[in-house]
Amino acid sequence: MKYLGITLERPKIGVFSFTGCEGCQLQIANKEETLKDLFGVVEVVNFREISSEGRDDYEIAFVEGSITTESESARVKKIRKQAGTLVAIGACACLGGVNNLKSRFSLPDVVKEVYGTHPIDTGPVRKVKDVVRVDIELPGCPISKPEFEWLVRHLILGIEPQFLQYSVCVECKQRLNSCVFDMGMMCLGPITRAGCNAVCPRNRLGCWGCRGPAEEANFESLMEILRERGFSEEHIAERMNFFNAFGGIL
Amino acid sequence: MLFRTITKENFRKMVEALMENNEVIGPKWRDRDTEGNKIYRFLKLNTFDELQMDYTRSYSSPKNYFLPFKEDLSTYRLEDKDWEQEIHYTIHPRVIIGMRACDINALLKLDQVLVKSAYPNPHYVARRRNTLIIGLDHEPLEDCFCRSMNSDTAFHGFDLFLTDIGEKYFVAINSDTGYMIVNRFDAREVAEDDQRRYKEVKGRIETKFKTQVDVTIVPELMDLEFESDVWKKWGDKCLSCGSCAMVCPTCYCYGIEEHTNLTFTKATKRRVLYSCNLLDFATVAGGHNFRPEAHIRLKYRYYHQFRGFVEAFNQSLCVGCNRCGKACLAGISPKVVIDDLIETEKR
Image (cartoon, rainbow over all chains, first blue to last red; front, side, top):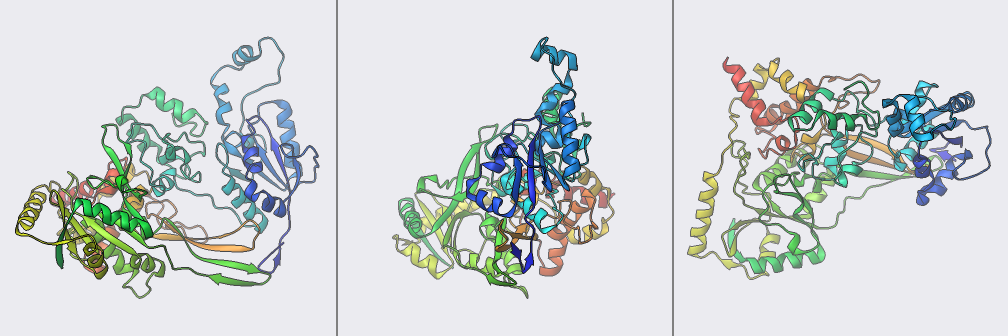
């Protein structure tokens, strides 16, 4: 594999799943039109969703899901030791994600509600970076396949990826969507990092912030706007906390 | 300028004929707002009936049909150490129906920079040349301040310009192509009655301008109030979301991105419309950001619109459509900002 006469290494990668729905892994595996090209430029050595064979000589680890058990904590630490580069992928790995709902209640109550008296290894929801050092975070619920491929190209070329700093509004306006605020809906697009191509507002659903905050997002101004528009504190808090993307704001 | 009239039935036939060989863009409605009003956008039309000639407000300008939000400037085929560049300026011929005078004036302003400057933009020129423009008069909306910006009428920059006079459209013709097309659909000489009705409609439009922005001293005001608290006041509210520049008919600032494909055999140089309100607009190589503060970025957007462009071209860049004001969740609009500046200056 060459780029402008320079030989490029074909990195060995592993994709690992922790607490989550495995939807981000599926994003990597399900885009058939570019799958062949992807597997041509990386060597997959560990990826349970596409192969039962697994080796531990990966150089780049893509880690999906939040860390919620002691065994997961130990496993992700082992992955960290092996991988030269560790990439957290998706809202669960980067933010805690929907799983974080659990953290709003006392742990014994949650365990009792879900598992009754069955013994279970479960703890508080942690982002991957709360457990091990993370080199890159690829946001989204689920991750965007084009953005994943964009990141892979950067990793192969050895260029630091520059994620979009601005908010979803830019992409939303570029798709000529109607602003969902005009249709009476709440939207976190103005404070959420772009890169999703405004897929939710495109489909007339306000943004829920799965990609986490845009750089230097103006939370205070949006809070004022939401209140002025008559959204209740409870409604705002529910939206802001959904992916645990805006912790500490409310 | 020549004038003719065309019946609405013949106008329909004309549009349908244009649809056969051109991409036809016009105001379409997509959604309704909370008050039940239709939300219109300039979009590709598949049938004549999708065209809303009675549209009120288009939330985004048709700028993107001349300056796409994302545009591949050139592509490269990479082979070993060598590469081959490919550039395409050709576009499928296009017709845009229903552009307002303000939007046509906006194109004339963009022409100053992108056609008439030392370095014309060939992609823009190609789109300009291959686009037939059919303008349309309207009664100003409550927040239109195009009259203050001297953009409420268009005398050139279009092929045809329509005014609804009841059963017919009164047609101003401004190009050979426009003349040939409209004549194929039984365009008639303007009768005395047509002219009387045209004047009535124009007279009614005259009385409907509600919003005024006093821009006479604005270029000077911008300098006098460079350190004004007004910038901080509105800058603190600014979400730095870039919506204003995206919907604006004249904001043309951009960035360049370079991408390869997944197999490193092709590359693309892409122009992306950007906004000076976005955080990293003035970030340079090495990471320094010349404008890290939202209120400074907001100020410079106004500077470009109301002062910088005046200095360069003797006219404001803003045409007074207030799409930015309508799109801004924080309520920032040229009207409120400039009124505030004038108020401060008086104190």
